Length: 310
Length: 295
Picture 1 (cartoon, rainbow over the protein chains, first blue to last red):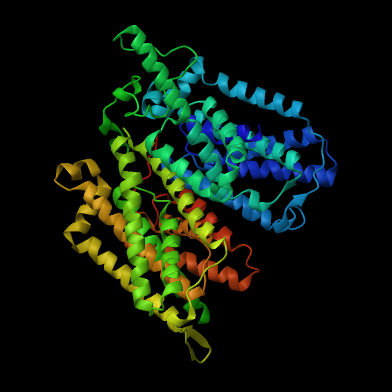
Picture 2 (cartoon, chains in turn red, orange):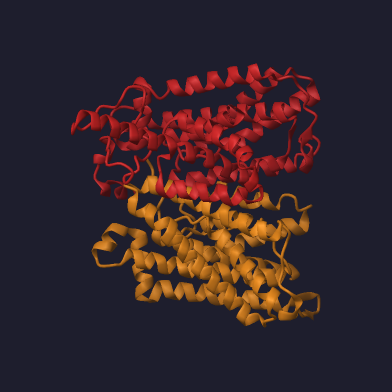
């Protein structure tokens, strides 16, 4: 559950066309805020989590302003730096953050019901942003910023929103995680966490909330199934991520969408499916060009055009 | 003065690691996150060989270089080439390369960690005896000298090679405009492999020398080096040899200063802060081309 929200915090900006891993840092901010409020100030847990979420979102806003000039790899690495900076601050926080050992004893009663409700609400809200006018706006802003600017879509605003939402989701996930595990420590916010987040999203699929949820479920449940590979877990994870990145850019969702397309096409006997099927958004970040010959219009752009942006 | 020696050593280690990364990134546009695992695996290969036979320093370094070069080429052929061939625009390709590199990196490092049970591993004493020279108040060991000299040599060689040779010219052309370069008859795939081979060899060299210098390395330290190298590259400017040198020296200097004058828990913050700062103020780095796309 928590993983799903966390995965969404990284995946959402990606879908907005913002290549940001800042959700990991927000996760730390939310986690620490919750821990500090509960242990030091006896704050009720839901209020603490809410405050942590707000704080992480609030930090997302100036960050969006600061990093608005960057895109692509530069932005990704800047946000990675931000994540690791959060963990360094946690180590050096002294009394407030409990130094290298972190904080523990966040004893609260968060029931499964709470979790289910929160996760459902979050997923529903994210799902809404994928449909209708808003969803299309976001897709265009991701696929072709110049075009969308010409169409009157305010791309910078969409990107700022992405940062803030990513911060909020990350903070929420961090707060919930602290509540569930009763501890938070600097090593929770690490390169490994970034890798885990990316793993979930990439394996599930980058294009849609379904991908993040599927990825989170798979990787929460996989270790129990693969207990026998216990010590090889890291190797297997790494290989899975690499393999998916190389051969299935759309992830599980991408592949299943492609299969759906194929089935539909087979039924229409040669008709080319151009209309997007209702409820399924075919424009995953990359409809794996070799997995399926299905193109959804977005790829009709000449290949050379991206070169001109340099 | 003692600080200067330490700065030079640290900078040379960063430099050997970062120069390959920078060349790859600047020319073929791949930010190779698997670089760290190539580094760790090479050092580990050296360790495995030394476990069985006792060799002097030169063959050991040679083994590490060869392993690094081979591994790096393999990563390029197995992982990055398919991605580049299939992606229909640079943005998706960038994302996939980053993620693919991350996956390869995690897998290889996990293998090394599994083999060493996450304990630090080192080269046995027999292969190279560390001597320390003292001049007045300065202490410098022979391995530090070697590292500094090798670092300087590699940087000079790389700079000359990029400036003077036809291959260097071709690489710079690819970095500026890959499409046009390909139309002019530059064989991109072959050159990309060559660059990755060289970068891998340099990573292996860095791995071997660092292990000799510290006595032992941990597989987990590789990713920290990755971030530091990234900071140095960003600071100097992508693809510029002079830039990487300046970046590494600056970073090493700042870290050494903080280490000697404070408690040391802040050291890792320097590279992260530096990355953010440089990207905010001058995204193309000191010597870099204006490459940051604005939309």
